[in-house]
Image 1 (cartoon, rainbow, N blue to C red):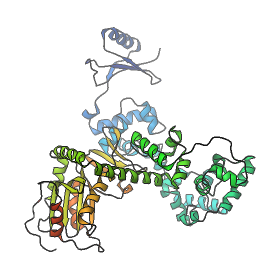
Image 2: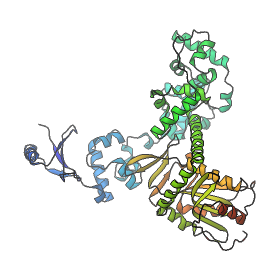
Image 3: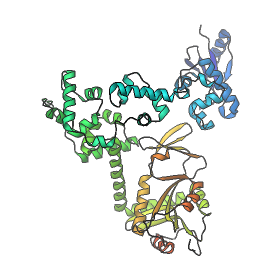
Image 4: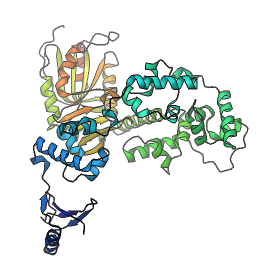
Length: 514
């Protein structure tokens, strides 16, 4: 008979009954409830197996050292192949999101803190990689090939691309270190000739003994990418025609750019983020991403989504202008909600430390230009700039992924949040309508919650910061010398002229010259 451990979890279900589970040697869970029928089964299993009930403790009630002891004990017992393997087989250790949130450390650092020797960790990043050896291998491969090796060639000859990027950051940086020219020089990409691509296509077709497909091009062509062929000729069918091969006989579906824009926006709102190439290709409502890129005349999905984002902003602005009254009502409700917003109150408190002789502060105001009306959290007027502050009170870790999507991680879960660029663009349009681009405006995206951390903010062009950094940023900011020197009194008159109704305005009795 299999040996079982009876494990009692600390949580209760809706009936107030604590569930039990049996764990056999194969790590298979067999849940048992505490009903009277199953109590006898539990007692029987205990009697036969000679085991006792063991309580799984709440990690919030454990000290850091107690958690580290549990992790070390389970790690040495499991001997996992990596992070995923450990958390798949662990029983008593807390989850990885919980550990990262509590200790603010990576999985490797947590293991080292728990007492696991560094040399026993199964991760490449913990090995001492010889930088000179990696550079020599790259240089020798270039000498053998007679040209700068591509990533495909580097992997094909058995070298570790992962080790190279861990050591140097990127493959191109490694090429730069060894003195080789990058294969992805933008100047070289501009000089792609149809004649060279046709010759390569003929060679690949002879090799596969048929008109080469896109997969064949990606497999055998090391010098150019599939995108180079598609964007140069406008598609595989046009490439085959110019190469002298007969075209395929099928009813080609016609698309229009307007229809594709509508379909992409629908899918964007459904996913609440940018779709990847794999997701586009698997979507029945969209053609493959190469076809979409052809209609938009772009070379990458990043450029494609940048155009879609611009269209979405324009649509939002147009919708606001057409529904001014409706937006005004929503703005009133929004103002009522933000009256008790602790985040804005925290930023307002920070702005009190600005010298009122040199800066004028407006808090929670509504500005209108024509039919367009927007609510501003904070507006600071100084001689060195006009600062527009958009305040967010999110908690947890706020980050931006490599596709430009904003994410919030809290309580062990990750959620996509709205990109603030659309809201900021509407605010900037109102300000531009008031000051007519005569003066410099600076937008600050401020996260006010004390339990908020920011990550990967270098992936956006916005000025993103915590509330405690606002005052020092404004004081030290040096204005654009090409813009006019700001006349604070004049700008204040323009702002107050466009305020919809009496709002809370920070006072500054006199303004001295700086």
